[in-house]
Image (cartoon, rainbow, N blue to C red; front, side, top):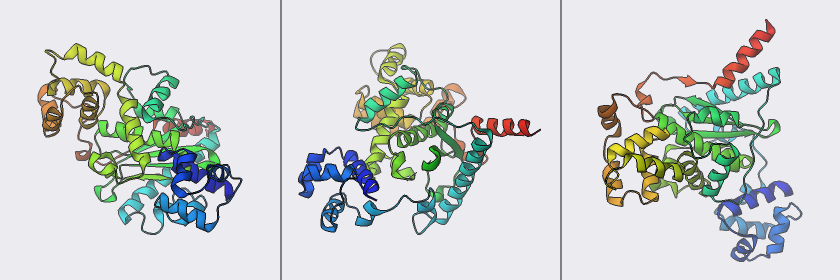
Length: 342
């Protein structure tokens, strides 16, 4: 329990970008005592724990809980609605089947690193460098993440379930999984997958995480845990390296003004949604706020189709037949196992 409490406290402190000295000042405890708690060498009194819990706006039970079984937090109580529970059960079955295939075949994925105390921008740069991506666009985000330890299922999910993505970590097996709502456009799925990849690289020890669609809306993200804003920042920089974006812009933009037609070309090149591309351009001050708001109101799908006759990234997945996309690796494990048995 000492160790578990220490891990939870350190994780919460780092999310709020506080030093041990900073937290100690807020809760009126010594920094040495905070250090002892985080290292699992000391247990705070109920009074001290209450101060810490109040500061983080948590119940005391949050810091004392044992690690819950992977999906229990979503399938018990009122954490999710009936539609969501139904979708989550399908995902759980996939995870269990996947783990069985790995066990029977003896082929396991090596987990990626765990990042601590870095900014989302720095983490995105370091991870791209570790994967040897340079500044090039990621052509198959789902296969890339899977081969680096995050097993992905893309499952069409009804809107009533209020699920954009879900991350779960089987600690005993050191196996991570992410659910991505396939009802979203391909560009949006890329953002969700990168968001869940951030949870995998940084939050895997913190228990399962369910991300609802509001997390991907700027106006609402401040209402959620700081890890969600961090994951969104990571996704933005992981998917769209600034150096490459500037290089592509220099080739397409004429006269210094970035037109909507130019942005469609660029977002097709990077394979992302129009929403995240506009956000990146605004952040880099490559388009003014006025243009950003104007472009947000344009029907991207109709505009893109009028230019190219097809859609890349923002194709309307929700209007297609509901389907589940299992990973190539999952299929490969099944085929390999079947061939071995024959």
